[in-house]
Every structure is written in C-alpha cells, then in structure tokens.
Image (cartoon, rainbow, N blue to C red; front, side, top):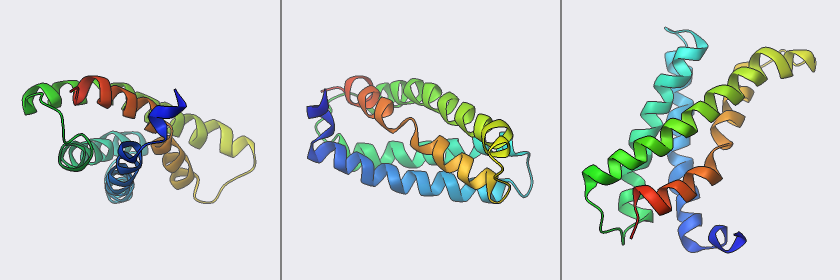
Length: 134
C-alpha cells in the first residue's frame, strides 16, 4: 500500500491538490462573509473540487482513457465522500474539540484546514481507481 503513495503521480496529486485546497480554503474565507460557516465549507469545497478535477485530468492522471463525462461522474462520487469527511472533521474541531482544548483564535481556519487535509489519501485512491482509471 505504501508503494502507491511513494510515486511521482502521488506527488503531482499533492501539488495539484494543494492548489485546489488553496482555492477551497480561500473561497471559504470569502464565502464566510456572506454565509454560515457550515454552508461556506460546502460551497468552497465545490470550488476546490472543480479546480482539482481539471488539474488532475491535465497533470496527474494523464494516461486515463476514460471519457471526461465518466471521469467527472466518478470524481463527483469520490468527492461526495471527501466533502463529508471535510465537513465532519471541520465541524467537530470548530464546535467541540478546539473550544474544549481552550483554543479560541482562528478556530474556523484551523478546523477547516485540517478538514481539507484529511481526505487526501482516500481521494487519491478513489481517483486513481475510479475517476481516472486506465
């Protein structure tokens, strides 16, 4: 299993995913000015997801023979699981874990950052074997 994560492809996934995560994180801060934290997380995740799809297709899973429509379908399914992971971790940290640990500064930012990082490994496997299958 470790072999899958020690590869050029996974490093490219981390790089493109990092850029998509930055879009996600930055847009969440913007959306939070107008929406609740919970809703801002979901909308920001969608922004990051669109960015991630195109970057993954162009730079990570370049050998996929799957149609764009089929890739987008599976990409969406994998990301439904990932957005749930992101939302759950972010909410648990922001409303329960960090406050009970006495942390009161940048709670939403810390929570959302950790929430975005959590699904990296499961998403890579899902995209490699479903979204952009060879």
